[in-house]
Image (cartoon, rainbow, N blue to C red):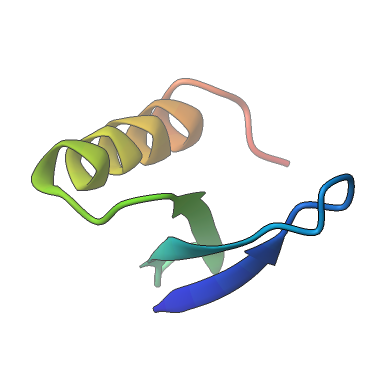
Length: 59
């Protein structure tokens, strides 16, 4: 999914890619915006997702 992002200071408009994941059994979700949609950014998003969900206490 592509989102339009507007810089509040300069008014410059950019396009961001949205990474979305869901943990169905726990009703938890995760979303992260990146500037480009490459394998590196997608992998980093997955690593961040797992680190936040597996290594932190979720209320």
